[in-house]
Image 1: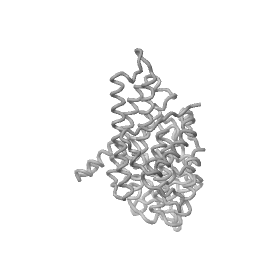
Image 2: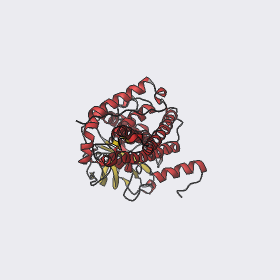
Image 3: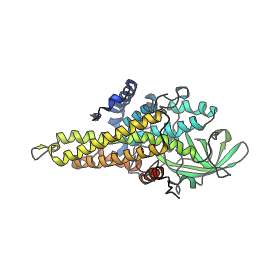
Image 4: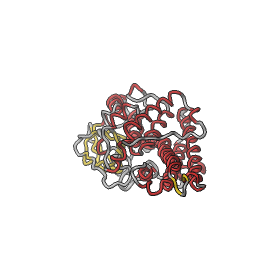
Amino acid sequence: MYKDLYQHPDYYQLDELLTDEHKLIRDTVRQYVKKSLSPIIEDYAQRAEFPTHIVKELADIGAFGPSIPAEYGGGGLDYISYGIIMQELERCDSGVRSTASVQGSLVMYPIYKFGSEMQRRKYLPKLGSGEFLGCFGLTEPDHGSNPAGMITNIKDAGDHVILNGAKMWISNSPFADVAVVWAKDEAGDIRGLIVERGMEGFTTPETKGKWSLRASATGELVFDNVKVPKENIFPEVKGLKGPLTCLSSARYGIAWGALGAAMDCYDSALRYSKERIQFERPIGQFQLTQKKLAEMITEITKSQLMVWRLGVLMNEGRATPAQISMAKRNSVEVALNIAREARQIHGGMGITGEYSIMRHMMNLESVVTYEGTHDIHLLITGMDITGLNAFK
């Protein structure tokens, strides 16, 4: 039986910045991960299979919609709690965090933020409890970094609309009960609507052959003259503001989450460097290995400070999309670099499933692309500091 030996790196004693509630939440999620996820995740990743049974378990530990008010089925927690939960999940696997992140930030959040009271009451409690799994349909085959160019559309048909188009690279889609979909109406405005599994003409083919996020379900959303009741359209938002607001919430979770992957790689490399003997001494005694480890913990510590401060700003309602964008890009870049250096410290063993390193590395190659690529986030920062738009 696989034994999870993970120890949380905290070089600057940042735990002192957390409340007792934050630590209790972290301990609860960490214990669940060590007991129920770590022993099985490698097997599911090797088989490229999504462990569907964890959906209810993630709900039970409060991983779905932690910041959504409790009256709607969420956790009613602050944003630092949300970040901590995402960090502990991605410490295990990015795909697991994706499942929770999509459910909370990209499905529950827009229904809560932009939906009608009827929509909130109908969907949020079932999503929060894990009875429903949700997905988020924005990206299209020809429109990734430029969502404004989407061609998925709705046409008025009386008491309902007719939805046509397709979305791709959609986490959770093969098993989703509901999809939050963004489409253009006849006036060219982007509208959000809730599509339910079982609606005629709505299919969710699964994406096969992935080398990344193999324990996460990815697929398409295909709409062929799907009749969607008008009561399923979000009444409170038009334009890109809707999906981009959701992405800011999800990117915030990734900023904490990707750092969890980095911390797991560092922890494994540190432990291995003390155990692996070469030239009659542990490899951790060699200067080049110490250089790698010292740089890892330095970057982790800087990133821990960044996401904590961002969490404070989120709690105060002062965090900007550009600040969130910077943190997402930084955490993923740090995590990728640390995963690659950790793989070298593990030597040949680093490519095996006995260690989490290569799985993290492959997963992070998706995380660095989805919800805003590395380069797009650089341009968001560039536009924010110069006031000049490089996208046009």
